[in-house]
Amino acid sequence: MRGRIIRGIAGFYYVCVSEENCAVYECRAKGVFRRDGRKPLVGDEVELDVLDAEKLLGNIRELLPRHSELVRPAVANVDQALVIFAVRAPAPNFNLLDRFLIMMGQQGLRSIICFNKADLDLSGEGKEYRRIYEACGYRTLTVSALLGDGMEELKALLAGKTTVAAGPSGVGKSSVVNCLQSTTVMKTGELSAKIERGKHTTRHTELIAAGEDAFILDTPGFSSLDLFCLKREELAGCFPEFAGPKELCRFADCAHMEEPGCGVKQAVEAGSISKMRYANYRLFYEEMRLRESGQGWKRPADWRGRG
View 1 (tube, helix red, strand yellow):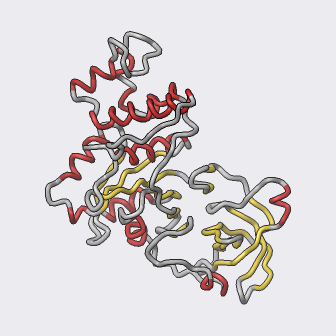
View 2 (tube, rainbow, N blue to C red):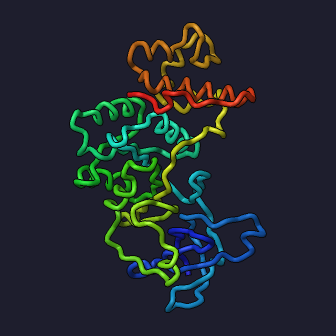
View 3 (cartoon, rainbow, N blue to C red):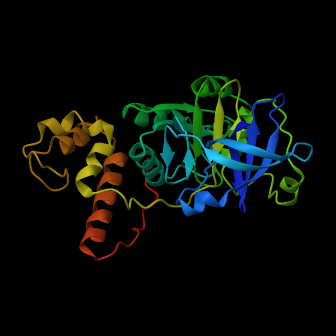
């Protein structure tokens, strides 16, 4: 029997089998995976042996080939990322948002930026946030999970794809995901109820049906992201808006920091590149410089970024 892992908790893997109402089998993985250095991931397509059809228990026998694999969060077969932040309460942490975008880009994923809590945006700040990131080439939208505004547009962007939802705690990420869930009722084995955690806070990564051939991977919230796997010379390539202006730099190896004749800095002064985005670039560059030199890095007082 074939299925897809929708969540994994405490050594148990919950596999949704393509049957009516998507029956979910509670499975263990065979020891051969540990010996081979392989670990099942949420999102994996698998073959399983049924141990008890009535109690929906089984064993994962084989992991099928992956078309993608993310390191953080550790998930498989993802097509794109939905990065969720709030317009207000809490105000957007742009430093953290840019870290998410870099992390997803490094893993080969296109990012959609979703600003939630539009119902609290009385001064229209969301429009400015969208302008900044749309100018960088990102698809952005504002929604209200509370009122349901913008959800149809968001569903259209997720259709036919497996999307990883990412964002810090408190921005309403799980509320957005709940609005996107399909009406499919999933049947689970007995043990799943015993280890279920809180209803409103994500404690584990979970694959959720969001319509026909559409799935969302809901992941635990993040409070910080370190750019460990990135080299300084690769950082500018993670800022799409730098691509054109950097061709005007005087030096081919310009780091866009203190060099004279920098096309990127000229674009910032002209207003075609966001000052906030460029400030985050400088913070990230300095963070990596200090790490590479072994001096360590101390988080600055204005780490949250400003709009």
